[in-house]
Length: 479
Image (cartoon, rainbow, N blue to C red; front, side, top):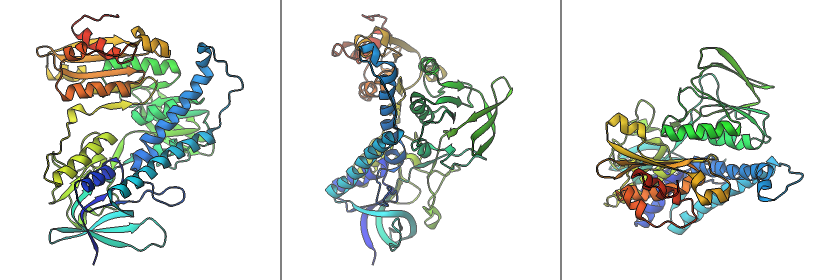
């Protein structure tokens, strides 16, 4: 007889492992299945985020920022550095250590919360008597396959990098986010197709370390999902740093050989061009990962994009089968997956789990950082909603001056009649941290006046948020 569980979670990324832990906290007997392996073949819990996404990219961004500061900015502080050198191997090793610490941390959390872990690939086998049989194909060589049974199934299998037709990933010359995080040396010339979050972050890492970086973007506008006033400020900053960004291009044939990669494309003027690079990163989005899940075995419904169809509560078309994170609709963000994981666990327990898509923050961890929550000015105009806008530049912020990083601004949008905050958009230092205050404010349906009246520490970057709120009413104090 197979082992039986109240809840089986397929996938150990942010959505999956958090769902498993919360369900266990609520008193359920929980199993989690995940197949990621580390270099030694052991479990590497945390999914794409921990292994080849959020965590390792931030580690490399931090390392590359230190290198750039040492080479270009320490002198401004009276710190002279001589004989500066770069050891990419040690940098990658540090990144790998950070990843392993996170992997091991999740293993510990599973033990602490009594979550049973199966190292392998989970797939649907059968549905019978209100229960689901889940087959576990072991990740370890020579281990036996087994089947476990659960009443509730939570699918959290994440997403995979989308490849460019005719240019499959080889992770040597043509790289996904995985290969981009494992380059053993700084390429002299690096190409990126796509100027989204992953592309810009990886381009920033290797540009700081000395690569000549060219970004090819098919859309005519830069960062189309971002408030365009903020996007233009970011574009100006990246261009000044040395990133070459070409918009409105149409990519043609991609050839990979021993000497590198050749990309044929048509530029915005309609002229044929060729980009020759040592390495090429493809960053054109991600696709839901249902490979090997066997949804057909139980009749689990997928949409035309291959994502699992769910309703507003993450319920699938099957009773007691749920899905969260990148494998369903909505933004492919780790923190969105976590919130859905918690909400589903609580719904299974008869509680009222809650996820507000309107207050999910977005962050691009470049330098300057870009972060936003709520609606953009373009979206408000398109909806015909009357609004007020206030901006405040970091160049007028004392803490930013002391940091030596005054690029960017905070922009706040509020309803013209009620003053409720409708969106906040930041480009500048520590934007990823500053946005949290704005998320809290919007969750409580605060007005710009509320933030304007709150005392913010001086000197702090957060004062720029207060000043942007004051600017909505045209009464900034420091600009």
